[in-house]
Image (cartoon, rainbow over all chains, first blue to last red; front, side, top):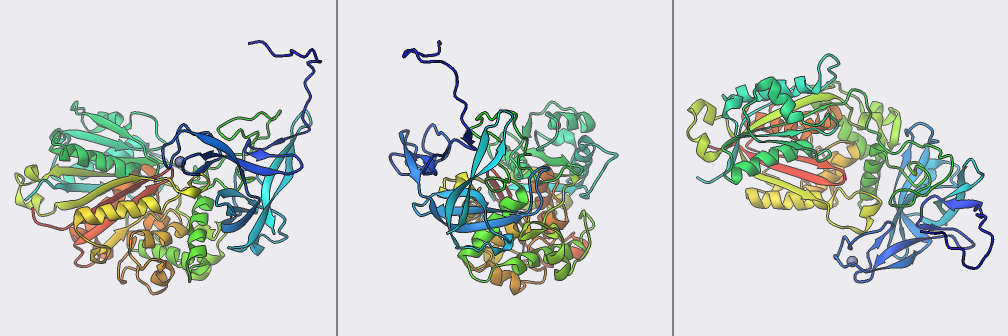
Length: 144
Length: 398
Ligand SMILES: [Zn+2]
């Protein structure tokens, strides 16, 4: 394969200043998550599937996931692999359009202030920089 | 008289740390003891199933070199924390299918101090490149929630607490209090020390609400069982026959789709499904169980399985532990061995060791920890990913 450059513009690669931590996080002015949604039953997947794990159909569409959510479960993690700052609050939230998401709850001054059933909203923040200056953008949830 | 499959012999090593032995030694010891317990030798076996998760390949064949190379088919099995139960069920199925009359199943693990944390270690990439099925540019454990075992099971417990009344830190701690207390009576347990509720609740938090004393330890150990067809059993001497224990149900399930399953392993639905199938096959209900050995890898896990196995009213697991139901003098004694939390959890061995424990009680040979008059017991394991194995055993006459 040959790189396409049909319009004759300069091929110099533009280095993005940031990248999403995972490909289902969409950055920009309106950060949000996307999922592959089964056209038949509506089940959503953050990764690619050959067939829907729920109904077996094979057609998917890209769907935007709501940024508003309710916290259904959490754990305050005090022991983790080396290099991971602790404690942190891991949570399972359910978005208002019914999709479960796992992420940290951020912005609490005391981790034990987290509460089951609390309303939360998606947020993004920088979580590291690589050797060429690209920032990694993570997502988490803050109290709404 | 039917075509039931029976436990003819069973054994386990004490769980603990064996720096001077290897996993082949441990497995061979459990196998030799189980064969002797059943009045058999390896030459009577038609099939061998070997369960281990973290050991080098070919465990079954390597154990054969220690105990007898008779040329029988060997199946090396791995199925997360349900590995041992899967090996046992494989022999069960071979006998049910008529391909074997007698078989040996064992599970073994040597973990040393490897730790059950798992989860990705955070390695800062030099240049961010998307990789894996989620296009991750760096390890996400600790950033997008937790992938550690204590954390995942903490979240399973806290979801139950969200959905049901009367469940919190104290109820989870009481599970650990019970299992540590039970283990003081079990000479095969890795730890045999009682702790107060205060000690359990103030031990270092691993993943709230799981403190250190609410988490199973890593360890080494092996367990083995000899299974036999009913037809073959009836040809054996009376003293062997009367110690045999009937397998009334052998069930293995995997996790069906649930909405949240892609971000939080669902340990509930497949356990409920397995329990329903097992009770149906055995013709018994949870109220008939004299003892239960269930998969308490963390205190939060045990509590939700009271509900999943139907040992309490739906939503009533908090009340069940608070009222003493699963204590050894309670309505349905749970984990009288000390459970994974205190007996230990050498992963491949666990699903066979649970069956050993129930078998020993049904035979009336459990010594100080004997549940008096036990006639029906259930052994449950679950491995994330997920797999659930349930065996119901009954004292019966062959
Ligand atoms: Zn579908």
